[in-house]
Length: 381
Image (tube, rainbow, N blue to C red):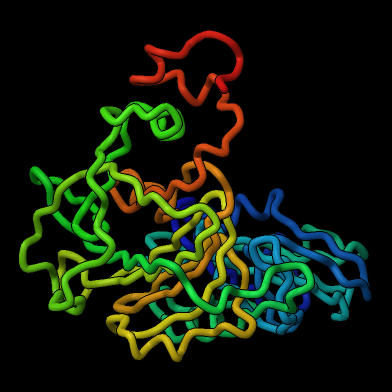
């Protein structure tokens, strides 16, 4: 699986094992199996619950999902997980199958058409040699573009309770709508948010804002939304974009709603999944929807038991609604966690309560404009 893409593990663990000498019957191209055959095993004991934090999935061995991004969930059973870049899950696996056999674990790519075969590993009971391969062919993971499958999984994720996480704020002070589009600039493909492609400045934001250096980054306020007539189902009429590095200045302790709005890319009938990750905060993931977000969609938002996450996906031609409290002093990135997309401009920057940051490490002001002004001492007050 490509390291910058989302992965699903459809691990199906079900059949007795063969000796390694029959590997060619399962995988005619030995190269696709050689790496896992040597070292990739998940060893378990019989009749125990094993906790995992991996991109793995099992069929006969049901997985019970109990945690996402560090916060407890209402437990639910599943045969496979959708895990996108930036996300994490914990599952409980009950090792109650025949311990004289080994079982396949499969892992495939989600959201992008794969150019490689699915990855394989082995669930190995300690009473059985890890060199014995399962009898059955490896399970096939869901199709990369089976979005209904992905949405069904995502909609099962609910917060366990409000003992370990805060209740969602019933209202918001500010709503920012971020339209994801693919664009062109000087002949290069870019990603843009509200037609601004993020280009980070040479000077770190934290020092710039704290010390009032207005020439260090773009002082123009970034757009809070996009024109209502924009057709998200078609490529942009004007494919050109601009670059910028302005900051969304948030009120300290204010409640902020973010609506991630997906759209058609440059090519017709193409809209991609993007996993968005917020630094410095967890947010309530209030829900997903189809098409363009409108005021009427507010009644669909989950304010009862939304999961508390730090990463969320937007599905093709759809929207995702998030809510968080700006209670962590600093400057924070919010961006697509597919790394090339960030470098191509798919991100924004939030800042809140910077005046409450007591000391700024020297390393945070050693570049650009601040580097020329402040290079003495270990910290700056």
